Length: 106
Image (cartoon, rainbow, N blue to C red):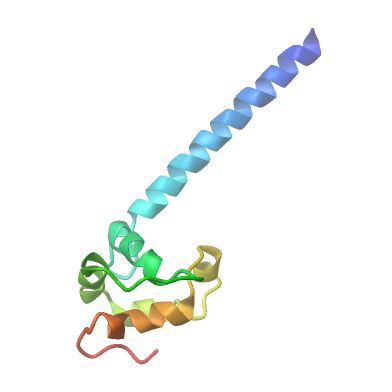
């Protein structure tokens, strides 16, 4: 009987951990970086994800128009981008694809 309660507690703790992990992922997605909102970043993700990147949307380009490009360039060689499924080479091309004035030279 004692093993039953122990197993039940482990399952309950595991569920709590999963819920907390999901909540932290949602919060991190809502946050932005380099003056780009989380929503703006997510609108650009299809354009920087292999194997079939799409053209950047108007929403993506609008988000990038407010970005701190120097800050974004700092992420160019980061392992953070590939871990999120983002191809840094495609990401660097976005300002030019969006026809933003003075695209950064990272």
